[in-house]
Amino acid sequence: MPYLLINTNQELDKTEEMRLLGMCSQSLAIALGKPERYVMVSIESGLSMLFGGDGAPCAYLELKSLGLPEETTAELSLTLCKLIGEALVIPTERIYIEFSNPPRHMWGWNNTTF
Image 1: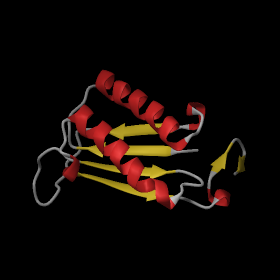
Image 2 (image 1 turned 60 degrees about the horizontal axis):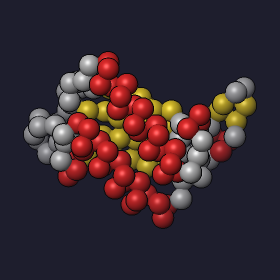
Image 3 (image 1 turned 90 degrees about the vertical axis):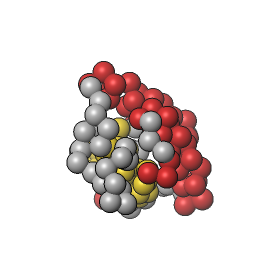
């Protein structure tokens, strides 16, 4: 049920994308205390992006998860910024993260909702 979308202007080949997705999937499962089999991650690399009017490396992440406690978002931000910053060589001040905790009835899976 957790879903992480990574958007970046950094160019990655498919091997690099899959390596990063694997690292994110494992890290999120641990950080959220959820089985990795429910974690979904995706990446869109090589995008045309500016941050502060500058085309230097940057990233925008969206993390959606049912039951995401507000008090954990600072720790999740630290974890994700560190991981993405190191993997993509992006300064953490050039990474935005949007956290979302959708209502259970608005998240479908396996022919039903949660």
